[in-house]
Length: 507
Image (cartoon, helix red, strand yellow):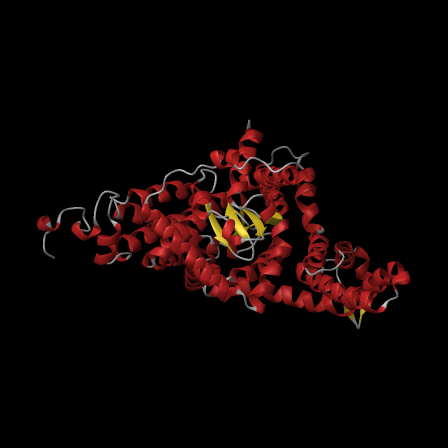
């Protein structure tokens, strides 16, 4: 039954993105189906947003359909299969998918806000198309495929820690420890593989060079009097080593005769990149990784509440600017070093502020049925940390509620940061989830109960402050007059409270 549902969702989406011939590539991340299109004008945005399974759409370097965690991993294979079937068979009857994908009716106000959100996203996309931000996007593409393994291993590590503290099932603890730690001990290899793949090299060569970093035998190497340790440099070293391997490989492809390419190119790629990694990159990347960990600990230990306020308040704008992608290798480095990233629970407070703001919009506009319906459908995803539907469908096109949502995120971040300053440090053992979905991944040095309570307190603070700030400061009188209008009401003849002008009480 579940497979039928996922296939039906895929079949509903396919004609609305222009059919199989309009698709050049298909991929997915934690929450989004990512499609590269031949002709953007063939996409029916509003019809896609109307599908029950679709939480929102985002346009970036690819067209991204937000389906949510879990769902996207099940719908994507069905979508790929439908595309392949359609291309290998006769052209399908366009009437059938159209009927399947018939969108639910949308009122004008919600459509207008969605259109404004899409326009803002498109304008931001144009501003984000700088070489630096495109490079950050490619770096993110290296780490995003690793997130499912980070989540799975992180939850198992948390379960193992719980069993260890309780003294239950001692025979199972070593097995869980091995399962949780195996991936992290070799994460550098996966980073190297993905780096070479992303930058146009041979993936296995990138993985081979990165594997040098985690090889136990590096401890026997004397690099100019500096002792190397297995894993030194971590994911940053693996990324640099694999990137170097890509450039060495491309250089070899230009100069090595074709008849000798299969022998010489991989040999020189691994040899040159490997030597540079051992006698330079591992040490430099190790110092950089240590500096990142030291700075993160110092920032929260000394700056605490203020650091949390700044991080929580600015994260939504960072997402809008595309700069949040620079944090992904930093999160991964912290997880590799300490077992968790202290930054993610604070940054997750931005989503709490967004949820609080959306609830305030819901109650502030009692006569705007279309917008309230959008908020009701997007809030469950928002509580789980999927903020795109609320951002691009509600707060960002409204303007002021986006600012007040940031205020809520700042308050939640300050709450969590304060406890870091008081010595209660904790973080997330994986990246990707946020909101309530982050609870199973939290870990710290002060015990599970205190860690969970502080994170829950941060979320509650973000909800309350985001709600309060939006309810009282998120709207002007004119905004309320224009927006708090039902489908059968005229905003020119209806007040912000829904009463005719003659009944309005003067301010």
